[in-house]
Image (cartoon, rainbow, N blue to C red):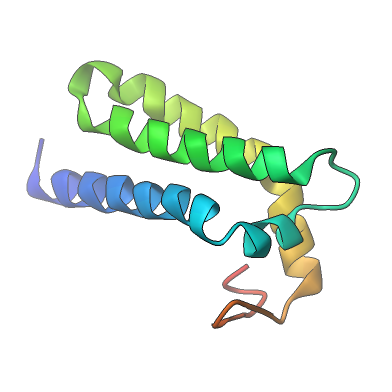
Amino acid sequence: MNKLKKISLVILIVGYLLAGVNHFRATDSYIKMIPPYLPHPEILNLFAGFFEITFAVLLIFRKTRTFAAWGIVFMLIAFLPVHTKMIRDAPFMLGHLYVTPLIA
């Protein structure tokens, strides 16, 4: 694996680990982003955090990397309603972060 791929992989792993942990730290912020038509936002938030952490860990190991990558792809597709709502609602404050449509 070349150096750029290794650096990109490390960034992806760290990013998903931090994002996943943040689902458990700042639950209220994430729950506000979930569209109201989706049931049980608290549980959906916990699942999202769990899967982000799980896929980040699975990215570390060569044998599970492909599975984790596909899991992330499907997770991002599942998160489309949340990101669409964020873009519609932007700009807004998310904790201390000012979220613009571009960031959303």
